[in-house]
Image 1 (cartoon, rainbow, N blue to C red):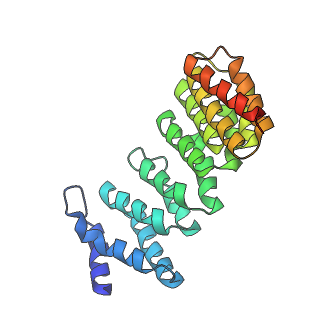
Image 2 (cartoon, rainbow, N blue to C red):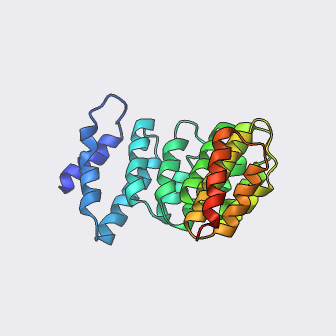
Image 3 (cartoon, rainbow, N blue to C red):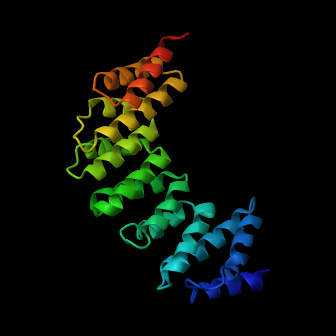
Amino acid sequence: MPEQLDKAFDALKTYDWGVDPNVLKPIDEAINASHGNAAARKELEGRLIAVLKTEASRAAKDAVCRALKNIGTAAAVPALAALLADEKLSHMARYALERIPEPEAGQALREALPKAAAKLKIGIISSLGVRGEATALAPLQALLSDSDAAVASAAAHALGTIGSLEAAKALVAAKPSAGTKAALADASLECADSLSASGKKPAAKVVYEKLLASSPSKPVLAAATRGKQACAEK
C-alpha cells in the first residue's frame, strides 16, 4: 500500500484531464483507511497541502481539494485560502473550506470576501452561508445593499441559510431593490421557517409580518401567511 500511495502522489505531478482517475484511487483509499489514526491523517494532509503549493495542473489541484474536503484541518486552510482568488480553482477551494470545521476556514473565507471580484465573491458568500458562519453576519448584512444585485442577492440567501436571530434582524432591516426583492423574500422565508422550526416563533412572526407588508408575490404571500398562522399555534 505505501508503494501504491507513493505512485499516486507521483501521478499528481503530471495528472490532467483525460488521465484515468483510478491512478489517484490509492489516495482515497488511504484517507478512508486513516480514520482513527491521527498520525496517518496528518501525514496525508501534509502531502496533499504540498501539492497545492506546486505548479501541478488544475485537474490535480481539484483532486487534492476534493481529498482535503474529507481530511482537511486548520493546517490546510492557508494553502486553500491562497486559491480563493484564482478563477479556475476558487470553487474547489471553497468546496473544501466549507467542510473544514475549524474557525480558521471561516476566517479565510471572510477575509477573502472584500478582495474578491464579483463573480468569485458570490461563491464565497454562498460558502459562508453553507458553513452557517455567524462571524460573517456583519459583512453579509453590509452586502445586502451592494450595487451589484447578484452580490446582494447572494448575501440575502446566505443569511437565510444561516437562519439565526441576528440573520433575521439583518433581513428584516434590509431595503430591497427591484433586482433583489425576490431573493430577499426567499431568504426571509427560509430564515423565518428555520426560526419557527427551532421554537423561536416570536422572531419568526416578525419576519413573516415584514414579508406580508411588502406587497409580496402570491407564492410568498401564501407561504408567509401559513408561517404566521403556525406561529400562533400552540
